[in-house]
Image (cartoon, rainbow, N blue to C red; front, side, top):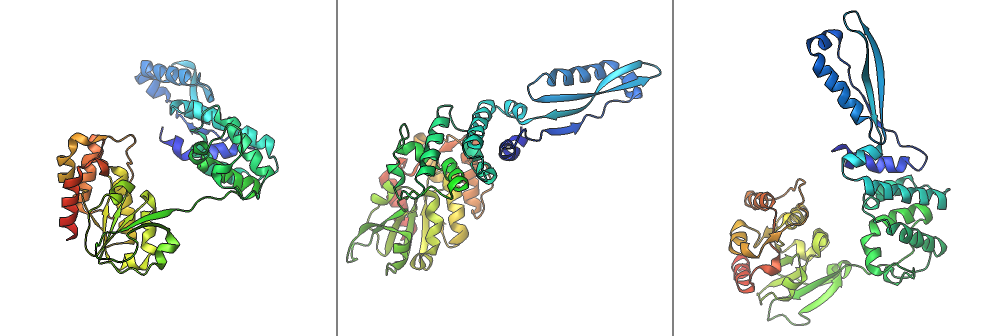
Length: 360
């Protein structure tokens, strides 16, 4: 049901203080004339609603009509559908049940905390939790509450049963809830570092290094061209190219490179995976760096290495702006066939030849 992704975060927040408000709408019972014209159809309609009302969290209101030609008739008049029923119809019953268990835990453990906004923000992650994650989340929030200014790095969190990967996977749940309960996690995180390679063989100094975004802004570089690559392996294996700096775009962090003056003033190229997210990153990057040109993100590249493409696990279907007609055509092909061709899968010799030709 389309209503589920739109409504369930609000329902989850409402459940902090009681039962969420159900969906409710009138059913517009038929008139006597309509019943006379199609008595079997009206009977089937009423029976269908009767069966639907037998679902958990569904309420059906009835009205009695007294018709001269048909006598007393009892008909469905209004239906109310609560979030448990909508979750079941949407295939989300288990996720909703676990999320409600978390909300009950939060309300019991931190009754004075302003949890509504935190639960709303964390909702999409809460319905993805497994049953055994509820206890882990409670332990993490309990430890953070007891140690609000620990200053530890996230990977040093000393909570039994919670490894670093668990915390990283569930950061979108932990952080908004910790903000609501104690004003933040009190933990530190290593900042994003961009891998940079100077591909010009005649350049002096370090040719391969990593820096933060702030450090990147301070570099006194003046390349003619900048090649932003989605994945690290492709940056590490690029061939020499005069006047060119390669930067690992770090996925969706690529658009932040628009804050670097020497990148803004260069000819900028972007090479990403041939999948829906690669084009989403390209569109976001071009929205802040309008001069960006894509390389190896076209239908010819896809056709040449099609045997190495795999199924994209979850295609991004939202609108992507700032793409050329050719890029939109390739994206449409990828979406239609559910394909994903990762950068590293393209034979290196062919990829380097295409890059040298595009950037020459």
